[in-house]
Length: 214
Image (cartoon, rainbow, N blue to C red):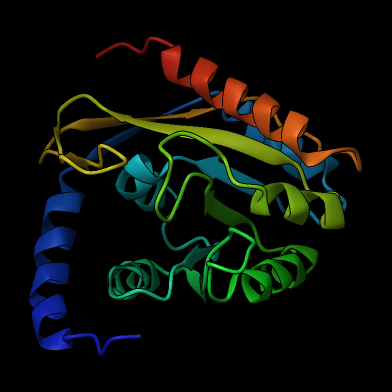
């Protein structure tokens, strides 16, 4: 991992915090979160979100003791810095599993332990490098080994800047309203992984299509 330049990050953090105070959040279908927690064996769940919605989704659940994973890259180090400032527990590595990803198995093992302790997690299912809006199997493995449900989440800002990146990353503009939408919890069985990933991707795509009042 490359060394993180904190002299650069601290002023950026205070600017980000100042802007984030101006955001207004509106939550939709929160009963699905309550249902998931009630039916979870550990009173915890996994939020599934797309990489492009990290800012809105993370701010909407700040300071609640949740956990997340960031890659071991320098960009992942920056993300970890901001997430920790927002009160999140951070696991460094990737939720992908395979020889290319460093720390993937450790992240999944650590996530399973935290879920069993009652901590809710947020997983960017198409991160850290895409393809865009295609879930990786890490979140399904976590759910299979804990029995915790997956709750898809979408963060829609009324006004935002969109980067020319693989994920079309979205930065909410100051003073905008951010809509946090939840879908019905998905309980993962012990069957094959690919059909369950397809089910998750479909649920998230349908959630993203929902219209909200501006």
